[in-house]
Amino acid sequence: MRTPSMVERFIAEVLGTFLLVFIGGGAAAVTTLLLHGSAAITALQLHSRILNELLTPAGLVLIALAHGLALFIIVLIVGRVSGAHVNPSITFGLAVTGRFPWEEVPAYIIGQVLGAILGAVMTAITYGRLASTIGKLGAPSLSSGTSLLQGLVIEGVGAGILMLAIISTAIDTRSPAGWAGLTIGLALGAIIMVIGPATGAAVNPARAFGPDFVNIFFGVSTDWAAFVICYLIGPLIGATAAAFLYGYMSRLPRTRR
Image 1: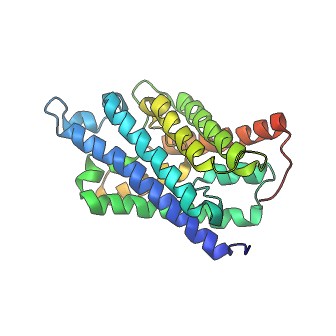
Image 2: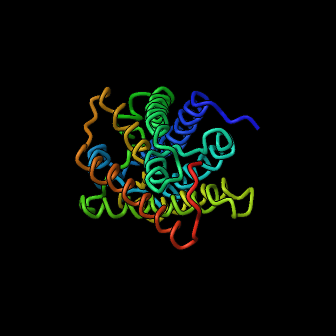
């Protein structure tokens, strides 16, 4: 079987991350726009840090399912090409633990970031300016009761759980075949249902950066300190720690791919 080229894997990561941000982030933006249509919720509230707390249970489930189903589909589409990392923290964690080649990390991360930006742009094209000014293109944010330290820990734990699902089903060749896509998608959906109200549950630096970056062009402000601490450093630490943990407790052999 022919090994996909670096260009093919790069394109696969762009496509996969695009789908994750467009479907998952788009669902979050749409849910916010629907909240904005409620007479009981003002635009001022929607621009505040309590947006996550205003989500109804149905809205939270919608966002979780959108992300989970999107990731399930992504694994099936590009999993055999690039491994469907679609998440810089997953790529980084696997590289640190010796299960992914470091020389391929830059291409993967650049592809993921580019895909996330394109996904956010597509959300803006689909729903217009309000998707950014009201829906923030689905960008995650901390709730009013969540500090930066809490956000770092929460996003780190979420990314760690996602890494455990990925490494145990897609990396560990001893796992039953055919379950990776469903398991990974369900894991992301479950994570969002639990921590979504606190941080937005990006658990993925690219997923957070794409909408934040595109929002700049619509005049929407971004808390870059929260991005760096909670949505970048948190997932990188959490995913790496989880990769080490699984490798230790399962005695997973170190393989570069």
